[in-house]
Structure formats: C-alpha cells, structure tokens
Image (cartoon, rainbow, N blue to C red; front, side, top):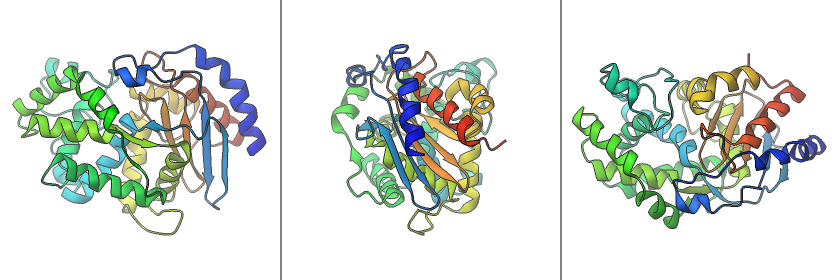
Length: 303
C-alpha cells in the first residue's frame, strides 16, 4: 500500500498545474497549488501517508457532513429534513437557482451552501461559537486529535467576502428557514475554517466507514445517521460532479474548496486527500484523479 501511494502521488502530481486555488477567498488563493497528499487508515489500524501529508488546510464544505450529523442527533431526522431536502441539484454549490425558478420551499440538500446553512442553524447552542465548539468536540473525538481548531484568519478572510452566502442567508430567512442571518453565517463560516491534516480526515472517514464508531472503538454517530451521511456523500458530496465521481471512483466522498477530499470505504478504510488546485466545479483536480486510480488499483468501488 505505501509503495502504491507514493507511485500514485508521483503519477498524479503533474495535474496540480491544471487547476487554480479558490480565488474568491483571499487566504486560500495564497496557498501553494503544487501540493498533493494522501492518508489512508485501514479497518485494522494501519496508517499510510504520501506526498505533502503534513500540510494543514481547512475543511470548508467537508464540514457539512459532520454539521449534518450533529444537527440530526440534536433535532431528529424529521425536523431537519422538514427544512432541507434530500435530492441532488446538478447546480453549483452556491446556487439558489432552482429554489427561485421552481419555487421550492427549502434547499434541495444539505451539501449545497443554502442547505448547509439551514443545517448549521439547527445545531444546538446559544451562540455561533457554542455551535462550532460542539462541532469541534465531535471532530476531536472522531480523530483523537485535541488540537483540531478553527483558524481565525481564514474565518475573517471568508467573512469579509461572504456576499453570496449572505444573500443566500437572507433568502433563507425570507422563507422562514433560519431566524438570525448573521449568527447563522458566523457559525457556518467558522465551521468551514476548521483546520485539519490528511490524517485527521482519514480518521474521520474511517469513523464513517465503521458506521459511526471511532478506530478506538468509541461509538459517536448512530449507525442509521452514518449510513445517511455516506449516501449524501455519494449523491451530493462532489458538488455537481457527484454523478461522474460515483461512476469513475465509486467511493462515498466529500470535497471542499481548500482542496481537501474526505472518503469512506465501508468496513475497509478512511481516506484523506489534499490538492488545492481546483477544477471549475470546486474539486481538487489531482485529488480526484488520485482517488480514481486508487479505487481502480484496490477495487474500492462500493457499486
């Protein structure tokens, strides 16, 4: 496995020159796009890492998975999905097009920004900070890493340029789906600014692969919720490339515009990938190819 990962990193490295970092978030735009890394943790606790695996980066949209888990554990599935749907959109992650054109009364799924803000607003906590602290506690327990935290500078950078998300939040308030625009926006952007490594993400992925049980044997997320999260990852996790990713890779995965991709192969392994050069849909160019080749090599597709 270790030799294979090193070979795949080398084979996919040239693709780091084919994309661009997320330019609409100034601090992300400054990241070196020539990075590529992967970490895998198997069900029998073996750890494999290759490339720039010590790099730190923020979760961004990958945080949506765990915010959804927490909201459903807090409020129950019925209440959460009364306000957000379960269907893929085929539209960009920050689009509101179908809600306006087709008069939908709620965002189509929790993985687009509008749906994710509704979900985050339903996490228990009196303030945005309390909501994010509860999410951090969950992630620290999943990974066994008490140092996972939010990067204030990234939060400030995103908050200063959150015009589209603020517009989405006001539309959600008009629909009666959230109450406080600024508090919701703060909690959502703070959760996106949580910083991790590939190994951290691999441990999160392994927890999902083990149906909510950490690699230390601690049950954190109920089995039914873990299954639901992986289903959303398959249908909506790679933005509007989710269908193509399911066919070519076949692994439940969630990407973020920092270049991270978290994947979970049920009962087998958790995977964390980082490659900040993105395609036009917001997915890591080299990271997606790396997962595609890995899936082929080890027959990881769940289909």
